Image (cartoon, rainbow, N blue to C red; front, side):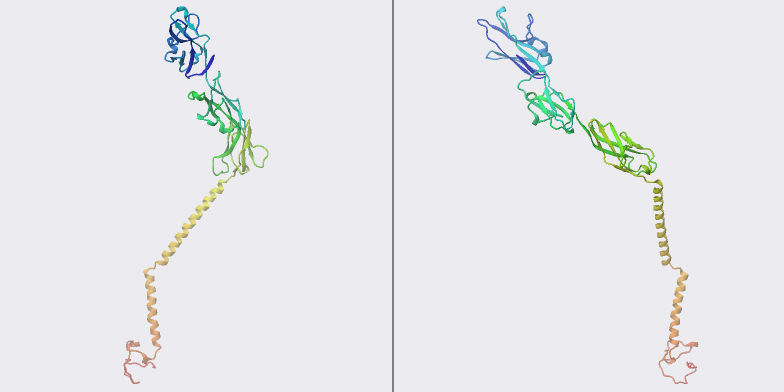
Length: 370
């Protein structure tokens, strides 16, 4: 009889014995790999110390419990019965052959995107009546538990990871993880420009091509739209002195053994330094002109609002002259009789407006008709 157990696990070996007639059983124990003159109780072997326990039962079964099983524990385990008669000792041979195994995950040598590979949880001996549990990156795949086979249908890059398995009744003893790497052609191919921003005639420009692929893309080709042949190769494409002749739209194509993909196009155009400088000068000139206009407007306002004292006096004198002459001219046209005593006549002569005087008036008054 053979028993297959996992390394690190605890196993139970059970033996049944028949009590010899008219003899007294003095000792029962388990031994390993017995030979003539070498039948030793496991309890007396240093390598088994603290790992072996015996459990005798009333139904004449004798159970051995062995913990933390090692590969060195492999061998034939037999039940030994010792009686009070030296030549009446018994050995249950052949006994139970103990085999120690470990779990290991086996995967196909190469898995390409859209394949449907099968993974195996294998052992060096058969673990009878065992269900298996599968893990990816340490997380249990509950829907894939049961058998020692794991089918992955139409895989993609998302299925890449570390896979391990365990016996359902020994979850604390999983297999070492094995990496499944799904191969796929380049995707997400893109182009970046260095340095970014405006390109001036004479600048150095570098285009970089990046992609996501497994294995990484090793072949890169550069193309200019509307041209049939490639203009460069390698992950980077450099133009040492850019000019208008290089202007256009560029793209790259990344390739590995499983396929290729091209990027979207990027536009390159030149901006001349002279035009940029002229633009700066024009902007500066416009700004200076606006400042001058503002200064002129302010000066004109100040001049209009500010009047000098001499001009003010002349202005007032002119107003006084007009005020005096205008009434005099007006009154000089009136009849003398209509004049009032409040107004002086020429040569300090005047008359009263309150009395009617005869035409032969006093010499103090003059006749306007003269």
